[in-house]
Image (cartoon, rainbow, N blue to C red; front, side):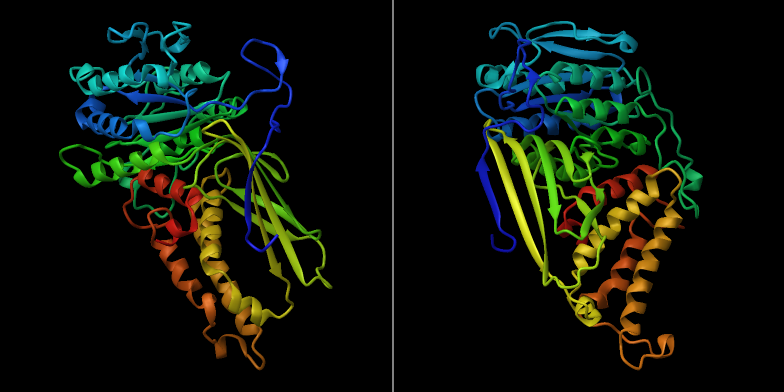
Amino acid sequence: MREGAAIECLYRYDPLQPVRKNLQGNNELRPPQAAVYVYVLDVSASAVESGYLHAFSEQFLINLDQMPGDNRTLMAFLAVDNGVHFFEFSNQDIPPKQIIATDVDDIFIPKNTGLLLNVAQWKEEIRSFVQSLPTVFESNQSSSNALGAALTVAHQLIADVGGRITVITTTLPDIGPGALKSREDPNQRAANEVENLGLATDFYKRLSLECTGHQVAIDLFMLNSKYADLATLSEMAKYGGGNVHHFPNYHIMREPTQVKRFEKTFCRYLTRKIGFEAVLRIRCTKGLALHTFHGNFFVRSTDLLALPNINPDTAMGVQVQMEENLTGLQSVCFQAALLYTSSKGDRRIRVHTMCLPVTSDLATVHNKIDIKCTMSMLAKMAVERSITAGGSLNDAREAMVNAAVDAIGSFNRSIPGSRGAASLLAPTGGLRLFPLYVLGLLKHPAFVLGRSVKLDDRLAAMCMFKTAPIKVVML
């Protein structure tokens, strides 16, 4: 196979759970998963006042026909404030019946039918319902948000089939499972040590892990104007291949820029290709080993990643270490095989193979460094160091500086006759830009210190670095 080649083909078998109970309870091969979409919408008073329901309704109606799927595609809608609102579609001649569950601490699905709809059969009813959403809740006075309860029942609703849960929220969940309290001190935004980058509760982490086991992914759209603890809420997207999108201070009248950003992002989100129940295996030449993975997924084994959802706008990073001497090898190879179910119900395998030359000449290494890939990996590693237990933002910043210093120092030591710092020489090739890019990272909202940055803005920037492809990171 030529270098960088990609092959995609149909695959007839399920590598994920070869013997799994189907919906009727029989032990047999799981059929290809249908496209399943659940929307969890914040309809609290502040959410309604922001006007996001108008933008959601407009973009949804424009793009409904372009959404990936086939005649098996399923869809459901949940709304959340101080209770969870279900919408039961039972008759095509009348609007859906709204069922409100107010016992959010012991939430359950109230109906067995009418909540999860076949889009092909109910498309016009779905159009009419979404068009009416902004007016249905326009007089809502509830200020609470039981997001944890809504996510629990959304997961239960599609646990047997898998799919995607889309969460759009504007406020801090403050009641029911996963309730949170504000942890941000506005006076400490410019402090030299940033606190509360970790989790306040493991509820959303556990939920994400449970969803991953049922081939369910969660994507979060955060449209908050006040602190919403993105450090904790972002965990819902972590293990299923989900994404976090942040639109600070969103308001349909006061923030037209954020409105345009949301519309464009949501349009792309609704219509881009999507894969379900995916697994990714990466192999490499003997003597090399995969060290650490960076991104949103669940690591099943040393070389196998589980991704309930995949999309073309997300990237991941892999660190490789040398376990043996590569003397005698002219090249090393890497191969990534992604097995997934398309939105049309096809099993597919996508294979990428890359062959790289081996050299013992440091000058060649310095001249041929892929600085863009290096910076993307460095940013992902810095995020992990900042948010994991025992790490800190200062440690991450120091590690980035040390990486640049070590690289430039290595270059100077490789020059014949060099006398260290007394004869500091500028590198050639991509390495020449390494210090400049590191300085850029240090000034980015994700990693900057001594400048007032809201905690949610900082976490949103970190989430971006964690999953963004190289071209986005470089911007």
